[in-house]
Length: 469
Image 1 (cartoon, helix red, strand yellow):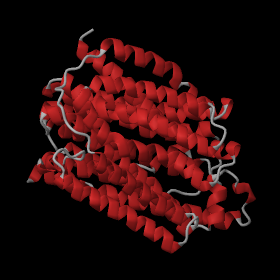
Image 2: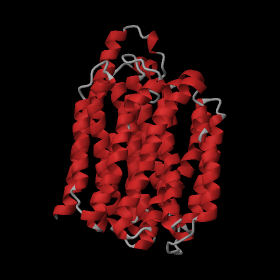
Image 3: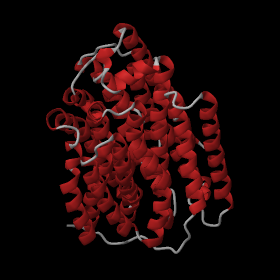
Image 4: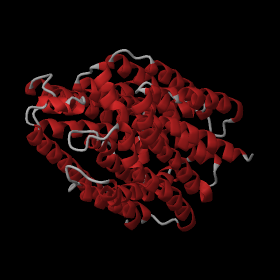
């Protein structure tokens, strides 16, 4: 087999596994809350912790990849992810599951930070968009499997089974990547920017702790605001440090490249708009109005993933042929229309009634993803692709993490805290005034999707700037 197809196959499995666990955990959250008797804040951090840890270390892992070789660290990522999945299977408390998800997240960070860079090294420029588009299908397949198979496993075998499937796949792929992949990137001796990593990680964690703990009244308003201000101060310090350090983790000089800067701004806003989409839909479908089981909830969401699966490789192929930047704003506009339609969703909806907005959301994501990622990776020198991939994926993870935090902020502002706790932990049958609380729940859902549509529309601006200036 031609080596580039070996690389594509293996990295596709890597991104498949890492993306699988982003959605598979969401479809199982109501069941996890019920069995482990978790608090709402614990449930939130089971979902959000994976994103935060991955975003916090991606840039450092990208730097390590440029220093020691992308293949070595990619192999390590497979091993760590498999170990983390095994530990998740035996979690006895929500807090244990958070910790073991951190191990998974470290492995996922190695996989995410190296997959795109490995493919960019292997494939020539005229095939790069198609390769990255095919790789994007693995993210889509992960979404499909995570929603449909995850729903099936949770319904019939319990939530622990959602992690079992990673173990045989992870063992096989770890051995295969070690045996077959070879280093083609340029190895450079650089220094690790530990202070930059600490300020970025600390700033993100403090911001999200302030938002989530304040939303759930774990801390008072003054304390929450002080924590948020502390996080903002650390992120400001991170920016100042990265401007001064000789070998920064977050290479701000890359943002002098117009295509790189505008494409990353678009991808961040896109992630902020859609990061919590699956989470909101899962709790809507399994919540007090629809009351679907995990399997049927997953089936409802398959059209999003299938639409993305169709359009991601097609847009990548067209971008290779035509080199037109207009694909990215078109994709964002299509997704924005889908979110705007979801902002009017009723307390109950049939599969066919939800089909059009969900297909539009997935179609827009597919049209946007491949050309935007190909533009980012092709805009930088070859020896900076590890860092560039890390920056891009960090912005996606960061946007997604804050998307989840902001979603729960909306829910807890519109609904009484005890009602939100009941709905998100699956005990909504105990609500005192179900009709009234369902109304507030639906108002929250409508606000979230409307805000998502607005943010998605705003992300069109940087995606247009990059090809009209």
